Length: 198
Image (cartoon, rainbow, N blue to C red; front, side, top):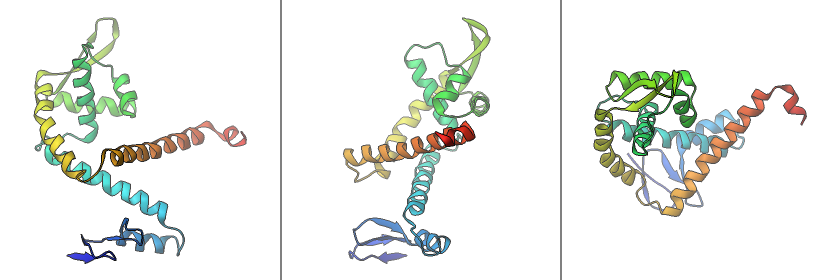
């Protein structure tokens, strides 16, 4: 179903354009208006738009993985392992993978388990520390990444069609500002009551 907005341009589904010509989702705006009892909905609409954009990119990523069933987290770990192998590193520890991906060591272990089951990564003892284990991408994992690269580049070019380099840089910046704010809130909440005093 097509909906015509104020500017006369057609949009698909619930998307419309506000008076400044910016896109908005009419369903989200209506729901958030009810939720806030007529209050300001802009931050809530922005959060919903960020979530929708994430899901749109994820659907394309999942389609490109050709049914391999890799989650975004497992794919991220495999990409990091492939990059580490390209720099000549002997492998990465689960702790390094967790820190790089911003996940807990337990989550990183589960992602490595998934990649190992798929034959895309392997664990081996760290020659420098007998207590540690290094994770590396297998030859099959590196080949899978090579096959995944071109469809991913095409998908990203399609989903970001019409975005200028400046807009992409600004989008990256704004998304990472959200991450930075969330991390600061987490630190504040985790610091205890004495943090509220300072």
